[in-house]
Image (tube, rainbow, N blue to C red; front, side, top):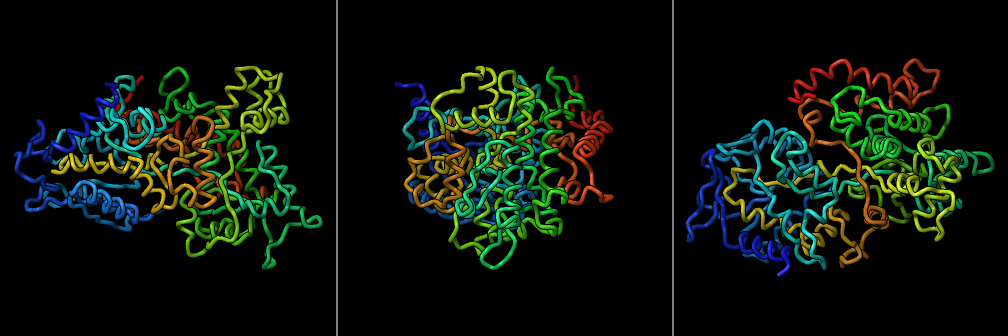
Length: 547
């Protein structure tokens, strides 16, 4: 028998026949007798599996639908507890087993690695959460593949759910979480307006700026106007939210390369040493320069009132056809459901590649050549440009595949003191199955777990909105996306206080360059570095790391 199928069979039997009670001592877990019913959260008299969900960007209906289908499939009584508070699950976990009966939690804030490292939320258990590694060694149900979950999830997701390991110098290398949402972020555009004015989606950042200049003059030398007579600006943003962080991180990683960027997330330089200098790369400066050009009022790409907009204001502004583009996430439609009823097509665009990356190439030296190579990578042309080397092609291909992702914040886990651990694992395995992901797609606004699978196999795929289809297509296409974003895995981040950005770019750049509050990209870059360098030693001490 195929070894992966054997693992799956063993796991399935384990989940069906074995029930593990919550921690009663630091040494391990207490088994329930063969005729006893698993209890929940240290409580007695209840065989109910309780699912906790925070109702935010993807709602909570999906959890209810999953619970209904899971109960029908397994006969396990399953209920859903929900809240609109981002801190609700943390408060519940702190209450401990005697006051908390939640068995499986869909969370939106990832403090998990810190909790593992500090034994936080532990109620006479060795770890804060139940070990889910056996799920990762099994083949999820319903897909036409022999790949295990560990092989199907994006590498970004696997790292986000794994607590260190021997190669990291901390943690045990086990998986304690699964990412239940992809949380893809980037640039969305009004596809209907693009088609009306004959605009093409830019492939490079230089092409993006050329397009935005064109947008300012498309109406007899002035801005376009919508049906209500309002100006249509090239770009919409909020001065109170760092949504520009999403494409900025991608432009940074595109320039520096994914390996260097992943070192930066750990607080390390290319040699693997902890040093503040790791945070002062040319790619970071280049990315700030792009955002500063987009936002400075000198260039007039945005509404002059943008600095006062909340993120919801900016999203309404975009959906009211007062801008061609904006930075946001795949939760846009759900959050804006009362403001947006369709009638126009909006879509994610592939992130334009940072034009500065030609400085790192030897055979691609102009933006025109960069655009031609991207056209080949995208499949728009069949023949590879003869001038591009294999090394440059691989570098540009990696840059083109990058997208920002908040999926590592959206974690599903089981508190270690749950007395329904095995039933909880069954539920998580069901959620990750094809049947479970069909439910997720339909009831969480086109969201799905971070599985690199062919999305066309899902029955509900054709019913998705154009926005969600465009997200899934660019994420799953060409072998799968390379995700970048905030990282909660490494001690310098979850314990040391390291951040990828400390100040709002929107406030620094979104004013006239003559304003006293304006900072150039170089000034902003220097200031960001100073905030790291001035306390890097204390960060390392707090994180418990050393060279």
